[in-house]
Length: 122
Length: 183
Image (cartoon, rainbow over all chains, first blue to last red; front, side, top):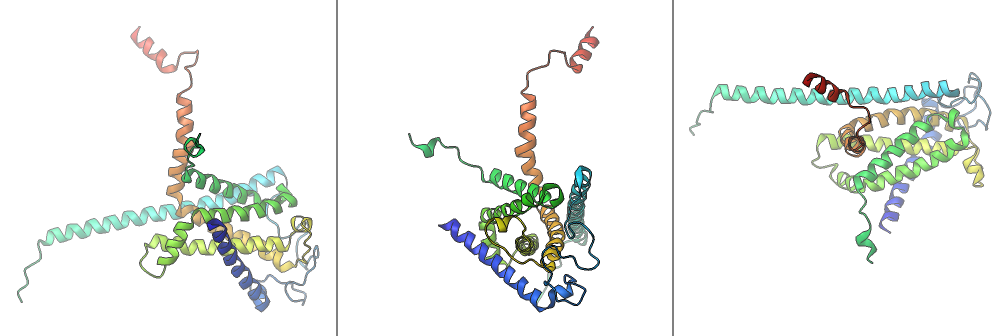
């Protein structure tokens, strides 16, 4: 029962996202993101298999390469994107931690060099 | 015999690791609809949605605890992670829903015929790029856990199994060189 409740909450959150997306699409988001057609018809009015002007031949709008070579190059590209992001974030975190340790150490060293704080007389 | 006593306790970390690995592999496969074909792409996409829900249920405690503390005191990493996960959830939801809207195999097989538009198709393609980037960031933020868990549950068992193998018939190089030095 607990798990079903949690699943329902997740689905409800998903429903909110879907509702917001549909509402935004109806209020001009499609035009803003350039998702609609260019031949005067409003966004979302294209029928199945209908191709707007300028769209390439084949199954337009779909990712992935054709054939084993295309599949491997597409897979390598997707993994490459993820690897690039991971490398950037992890090296950034490492650099940040090194810098903060150095800053902390230099702060501690300067406070030792200055000696104990003078007694304040009120 | 009490079955609860004899049954092995499932390791939650191992379950998380397996679910995450399956989600990652499924996402990579979903990015290749030309290779998998539309039927597999669509059914795998639906399974991917169910796996994503499972992932959220498995991390429910973190989700609730962080949501409660999001407006109060919270470490910066947790705050960034929460924001990123929210964006990832929204992007994945749009990706799956737009996929359902342009479904050519799965939904018609269930008796549902929608009238897909170019907008949903274009949104589906753009969202797959967004989710790829957000997933990369999600993986990056959990990189330490991924490395540690892979070492513990993949590298260590394989290394232990390899070291337990019986000695080969041909003497190892090190042994030969020691004997030669001794002679």
